[in-house]
Image (cartoon, rainbow, N blue to C red; front, side, top):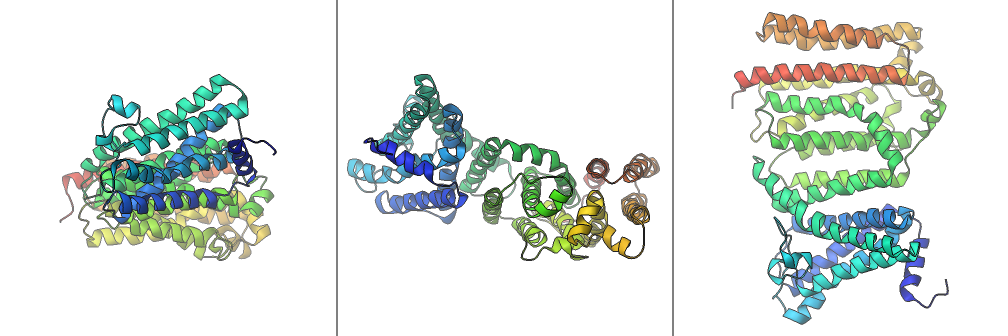
Length: 498
């Protein structure tokens, strides 16, 4: 690269770097941290730790937002674009320095704005609403840089304009107006006391994850296909809330976190199961960089939930810990019986507890404690069915699944599957029996198992393949959803003692 244009030279050398999510994360932390220090020193702003996290999450959002827009407008591989985007994001450290010279120490501030923007917000120059001159100059510099980068790649003024316009819209709407407005509305609707910056950070991370999936369509497609594995755990979270005080807006957050924890586990599983998947005719679609992205974003969300007046962060963190123990090579609990199924039981229990802790003042009555142990033990047994599709691969690599252990005891696959199916049916007969002793109408007690159990038996009786496991998950999810409706009706009429 011999160009005398120094901007082109910087872009060239940035694009030559191999994509690494650590680089992206470090840049977001660096710019967010430096920006915080500058505002404390130069703007005399009082910062709390959740505000600092929000700064770092904000720059992570900016990196992936700009990357998505510029990658589409310039038709360039996003992993090259993202390294060039870091140049524009790095400019974020300069506004406090510029504004300190213009306004003087402590005479300026930065903030989001809620509601519709005024005419000055459209130009990013409004001292009274957190857009002093330095901030406006840097934002426009980033927009112009994005347009210029697109022009370098395409030599098209139209695409250059679209790239700059896209980044302008991102800055104006996503970072400036929509997210802060939604966050303020949600914070008011949740029964717990939640710092506004925590809610804002959560809603900033959501588009980061969405944009990453858009940039990686194969990951999105495969996770969408396998997301059914997460649904039973989401329903267990709603069940926990229903029996301990009622489903509320914060329960939706807990359930969403359970779902995302499931996706993170699927990504880990697909990366570390490369050997088994190859033997089964499936090929890995994730890399170590993808695992790092999903792990990091989930852990940030868990840390943010720690700042909420609720214990929900505890089961959410526990789910991540056991997922690592289950999948990662250094422990690989998946390969050892019964640790593999006990971890599945912890997943069921953790999901149920997340729902319980989503209630403002949960009370662990004897009944709820019994439910918790039944879910832990029951899901440890029920989860055996998911290994039905991988008998050959598990046997080849030495995984000690329930099927393999039964077959080692001189049983055929058919006999082993009959035992597994019978145990699952017995587990799902327990809630129906409980409904009877709970005093639920006899017709509900009869129809509930009558509708669901034959469907479960039929799906379990199919040949070992991915479709069978998927169909069993569908039936189990329907079963849990119907049970949830019944539980809601019971505890609405007879709430738990507080």
